Amino acid sequence: MNNIIKKCALLLSTCAVILSLTACGSGSGTNGKTPAPADITTKIMQQVKLAETEEITADRLSRFYTVDSSSIDKMSLYVSTSLASADEVGVFVGKSSADTAKIQTAVEARITKREQDFNGYNSTEYAKVQKNVVEVRGNYVFFAVCADSAKAKTVFDSFFK
Image (cartoon, rainbow, N blue to C red; front, side):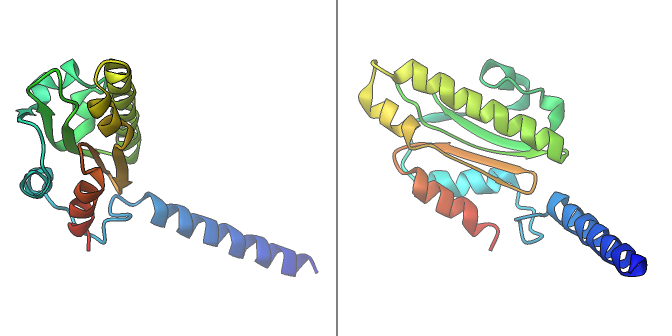
């Protein structure tokens, strides 16, 4: 009886380790694909109408996001050039799963800030922020705030099929 319990415990422990290793892999959810963030944002901007935007590089990231750029392996971020527009699209790749979680938190904080900025000021832009999309795939963090965030997400998803 003790042998059966020990074997079951060993089997359950082995399964737990295998599942945790599989879930934490950097390719989790990416089908092993590693597209360049710039390729993703370029295609999104070709297929989704955005206000005029400018590229934000890592050295200017802290003006918009509360994340240390040393947590980011690669990124592509575009922000509206007009303070009256909420349009933003970005793809970040974290250096680790912990960094990816920090990036996701920073993106969500930015979206909350933008909701506050536009609530009661510009209802059209506020609606865009309300329909934002944030998605994490492996170490990729994608987000879009635009009139057609769902289409932007479809473009992002297409890079991992």
